[in-house]
Length: 166
Image (cartoon, rainbow, N blue to C red; front, side, top):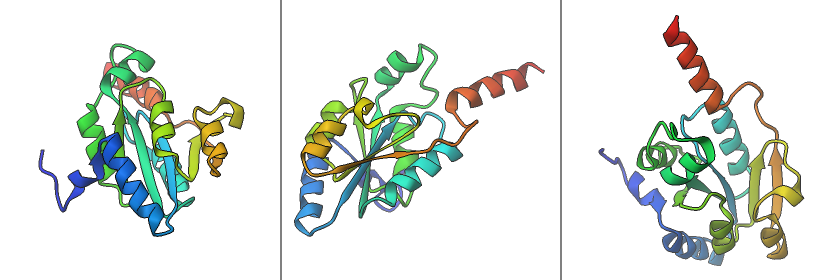
């Protein structure tokens, strides 16, 4: 796969992300964080990423690894590899860094990065969001965005299966 104009530099390890975020914060910039599997990028994902990007100067996206997605979504997932999913996310102008994590939740990543803003979509409460307590204790805030009804990767996969069987 060919990376264009430094896109590959946006896909980083946790340690690299920590160093980059520290350099941003030294200059007074704020960091927003969101996460997900982003298996087949769709309008709901783009809405959520856009909302997260509005919350700070920089946006970091935590991306579940292939094994993590498999554990969470089942043996037929992910459809796209973590390298391909990271590449797609890194090509979005709103995304400043992509960090792949191996765990089933982003707790360790959030705790390591301690963003200024933690953004989740869906029907969560602050008490149920992984890493929310740590971000708030560090002086940050947690934002819950609404979800776009009818848009999900699982729904898209089911629609493709139904369409291909006709």
